[in-house]
Structure formats: C-alpha cells, structure tokens
Length: 114
Length: 115
Image (cartoon, rainbow over all chains, first blue to last red; front, top):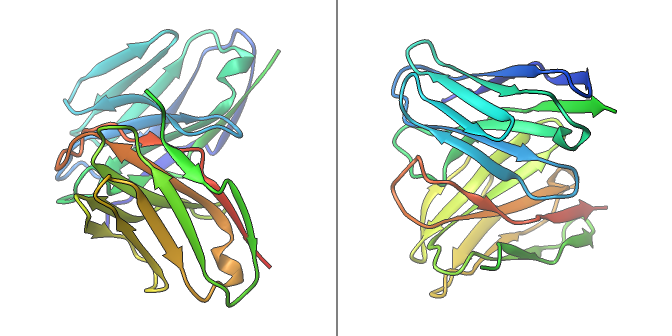
C-alpha cells in the first residue's frame, strides 16, 4: 500500500520568514506527486503536479522540487505572509490506479503570525 | 466556469439512518472522486467514477456506495450510519481519465454529523 508521509505536522513562523516542508513517498513505481493548499473553510486548491525527477515548479512565492529516486518533494514558501496560513497536502496516485485514486499525506499545517 | 458544487453543505443524522450526498463536477469533467476527511485519518479515498462506472474503490465498508449519472453528476450514499461516519466528505472532479498526473478540483465538502 502506498504510504505518503509529510513533515513536520505543524509549523509556526513569523511574517517574512521563509519555510519549507517535506513530502516522502515510495520511490518505486512513481507516477506523479501533487501538492494542494487547504485553507480553513475553503476547498483544497491545487498548487502543483510534478512528474519528472529534478522537476522544480513555482507559483509566486511558493515553489516545489521533486526527487523521485529518493522519494521526496520539498515545498518552499519565500517570505511567508499571514494569507499563506493553511494546511499543505501532498498526494500521489496509487500505483496502477487512475487519477481519482490519490493517496494523501496528513498535511503540514502552517501558521504565519503577523 | 463554475467550480465543483456539493449539496447539502451540512447534514445532521442519527445512527442507523442513511444519507445521500450530491456532487456536480465542473462542466466537461468526466471523472468524479469522493474522499472522506476525519481529524485522525486525513483525506481518504472512497471511490472514483468515470462514465457512470466505478473504477476504483477505497478501503471502506459496503455501507458506502455511490453512482454517477450520464451528466457526470455523482451521488454517494451511506447506509446504517455509525458515529464514526461523522466527517467532511469531499468530491473532486478531473477532466481526463487514466492519468495520475491530472489535477483534481475539489468542492467545498459536505459536513456530516451523526448523533
């Protein structure tokens, strides 16, 4: 069974700090890695889908890297703002499954203090 | 384009009852997936439908079922509700099929409370 792990579980930073967190997944039979941001009382919002080893994607102050050989992805937030406060989830499709069979990590809850 | 919509947003039921939740995907999206979110377990996959067929099912008891209609709208049903079924149920739609790299677009969820 595919197991996706995220660390840390929670993170408290000050406005302006840069931060990063980790998603670990089995490196064998890798297909894709998804990152989502989930703000309280809202729907999870897709950030990135990554498929290639060494891939790096960026969206504003948020970027992500992927290492499929060792089975991890990092999400970086540069100059955190209070509006970045959310739970960040990573997910990977179950091997052999369609895109509808995402296995999610339990998330990293980020709180940014003004 | 309108996003994924789910109805109702909140629901309170008692043990033993059954419940039906509805999901309307983004127009043109053919794949609909359902997830359960509980504080301890995080987001867990329930099932996925494409072209009215269930393609994948997660590790949930048979009390959880679903279906998809020809217009891609989907419903999920939980029979004989238990206290542990209290959760946020999220629906997600995706435009393509067979691609694990496709983005899923989530609805706001239905918060089910079982008393």
